[in-house]
Image 1 (spheres, one colour):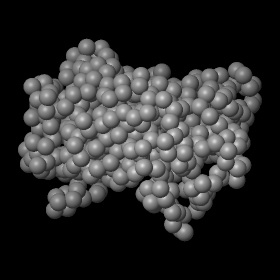
Image 2 (spheres, helix red, strand yellow):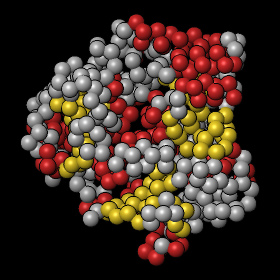
Image 3 (cartoon, helix red, strand yellow):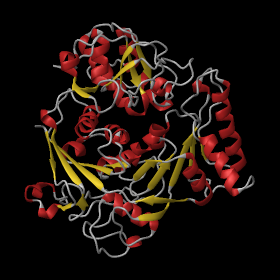
Image 4 (cartoon, one colour):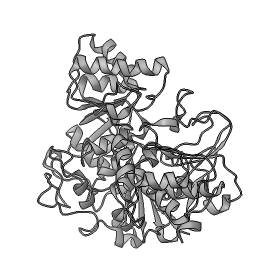
Length: 500
């Protein structure tokens, strides 16, 4: 078995005999912070000063919430009022949150902090749907009224490049624009807000009512979740990506396996992942029911943040004796490329087991699979094959920056070719305007929406009936490697056919 479950009840790691190698030594999780980084790190056995002296060992999630609630210590199940560092909303939930805020706090009320609210239109943008367009107008009017500092507006829908403030998919834009910082609390009106946990912070999705309350107070009542720990060790094979890891995990524990629990990712494999790959890992914890996902901040985190934020931050790390509800171990070197078959993210199968599944299209995009490295991975497969795709292959960069990267960054081993050049040679569709696109269906004129009962291999995050449009459509969730390989054959395909 490539994974195993340990300690089904609360357990101290020091009492678990065979976990001595994973006891959060200073070499493994307590990262020294380079002097050039504007942050300070709590010593391994000491809590940050704002939480007082240590009386009970805590996990990362418990420590972050303790600090945000000004408590000395917290335990799973505690209900606490948390001070929010960042609240994000977008065009789908923003108008509703604003309506609740005005109803409860008054038409002339002001938000608690205009610099801690980030508003990002991204879902239903490039459409002629009047109601979708109206939602963006509501956001714009509110931001002007409140003098919101971080509103990434779009006015010219015919040419996204004419909108210098427009970013694209909120979860990727939050990271690129420096709104994600270790040790902080980031809430958003979107279930995939958990993506930001890759930065060592508490990040989770909330509803419009909660968001309306946060807009007026900067606080929210939260229940402290217990933590599941996922230890991933071993060298990552060159045919696997982080999407394979999270699909493996969801397949292991099920879509309800982490309901209202934190999912903490550690191990040598996790330490080797880039920030974008860590974002993919945390992005889909909600597909397992998770409250939040979190990766300990380290030098990779600090380097990514250089030049992106001028605010100081203070990472925290799980204590050596922190208690975890369960632990799962994975030897990543033994894993194979996987997919999630229709119609659930936990319907896991090996990609090679689905080789007879004929497909109609491939979609590469979204907060999960539309980042720069995702397109670089797809281009690597196309380059290795030297062939053309056999089904329509839609490319939707997550943000304007990703779109620019697709057209400007040379793919290693290509002789200087960019992703866009390789995609064109492979016969893919031209990269579209950055947005959430067809990941969640959207208006009928949404680019690449499934308007017919087709079979699609997608780098997105959900494959429920109707998720990408047509209720009879079938969606196979996969990594960019597997998606690109499948585009080349017209069948669900293990990327090792082209990468080995």
